[in-house]
Image (tube, rainbow, N blue to C red; front, side, top):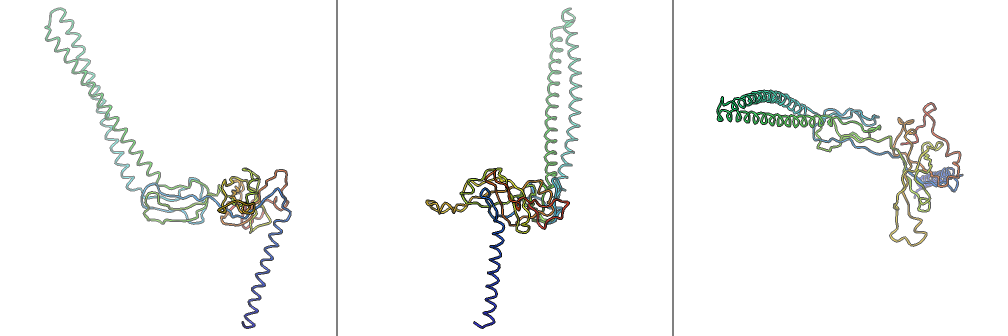
Length: 341
């Protein structure tokens, strides 16, 4: 190896050694003064991802947001083409108007038949008096009686027809409501406050039912997941006080709470027989960032930022001063990367 090349290799080795020593010193300082009642683990800030997908197949009219945009609950993100659905709705509304006219005719028919039945009833009552005085014959009386029965049947038939028409209009109205629901579902809105992570479709693109148009980060559900050895995880309680310190701003620590402790180890040897092997078991612990803290820094929240999570396993232990320094409020100079991703 030539002398110049050897010097370059030695310089690189020296730089790597200095970097390693610097990392060790930084880690030592971070861990210095941490009481026994507090455990820690490395992790990164994460947020729940929410897919915005179509319920029905169709063509996109407009995607109203871009990657990185902040969105609010109820905000329209994507509009699907609804021309065919609107035509179907108009057809259904016309059918309803037609059936309503038929309902009016059916009601008028009932009124007419009831009038004829009333007349037949009067004729029969008169015939009954005349029959008693021998003024008419039995055959004439029975004819009046038969006319009343026919009138009764006509009223019943007209009433049944009205009920059938009313059922038809109920079906037609339900069909219009179904189409209107499809039109409403063609406006894809944000279910949460968050940030657009991925734009997966463009204007004019045809999506199948369930096709994804966007992916959002739910900034109301921000957390850090850390891994703790079995001996530490066993001492962690749900709801325990926690702190999150980010690599980019280690001078601050965000408050958090333990929201989940995995019931199963993430790294498990095939045979767990010795104490040394049991020490290899690592359990996932989720540190939830309070929503109010996320809201205070929502414009700067980013996922993927790495850091260290600290969990208090002994309530009698106080937080060290360097872990009890909250991120500045909105009035103070904002950190480069906030407590929550």
